Image (tube, rainbow, N blue to C red; front, side):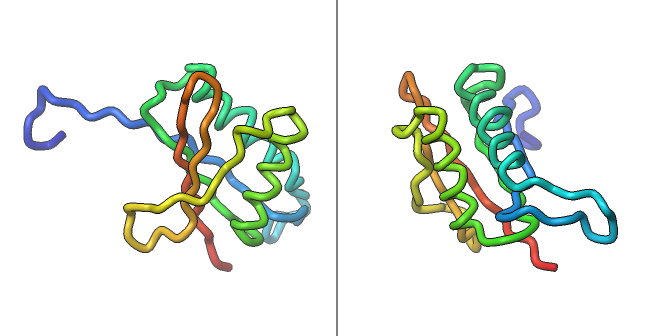
Length: 123
């Protein structure tokens, strides 16, 4: 807070790179595995909030480096489903941030609700 130095606003953001399908890093021979990045989004993104490793005042950003956000969300939901977490599905939600097209919300055990924002980068 720049106006009142004694009042602090804390909001935590966890960010993860996401791709729709396996691909190579631009200009490199390193192969990126889409399903591993999507699983990492769940294991070290979502789970760090619901395990309270991170404070619950926060959200997740997914940097879409390749592919379509809608398909990536379907794949993240499939990942949750494979872990028997069907009720924790990411759903489209209304976003109050101008020009941010891909906004989702998920509800987890103990009523923890998370916001997910996907940012699509063009080549």
